[in-house]
Length: 246
Image (cartoon, rainbow, N blue to C red):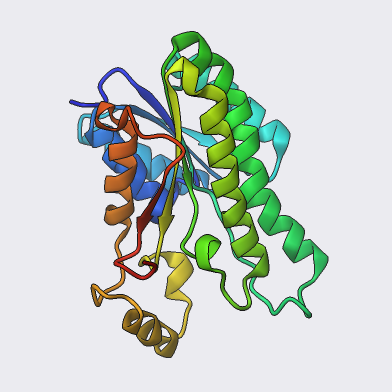
């Protein structure tokens, strides 16, 4: 299997894109450390992976807490031996027009979506440097590329992930470590389930492929960027959006 022998750490793994990415990486042969706040959902995911013959372990984690990030990554490294694939997927929204947006809503989105990625990268980089191999994959968003009314905090955090991706890619390229971002478009997840049917229909009209995406569409891109097939790809933003942004 393409990722046999590798260990992946996936944040926001309890549901949606993160959960599907963890399942796909395990299917490709990686052992997967799954991290999120919901211990019960993590345990269900670990059970699903191990029942299918894979290897996984759960690490409860609120990525808004720096000490929890340090402790979870250390625990995963101690238990699994190393982390050489990192998927920064954890994300939240706190939507509001900018003139009404409260400072805590700005801060919490930037902390969870952007600062946590920097902190996770900082924790895994030393081991990747020693291994002289690593894959860092940041889950951004089409709205980090084109903006979105009512999502100044979310769009800023996801645009920031793209800048972070390019900077890290330049810093670590000489050690055979790649850093890339994936920018999903409209994907069916719990985060989008709460949107009105009218909004969803309007969104589909803007997508040339005429459908919303599935978490599996993003997971396939993650598996590719984690593999040796993408060994010459770094600092790249892979759009998975059905043609929404051309």
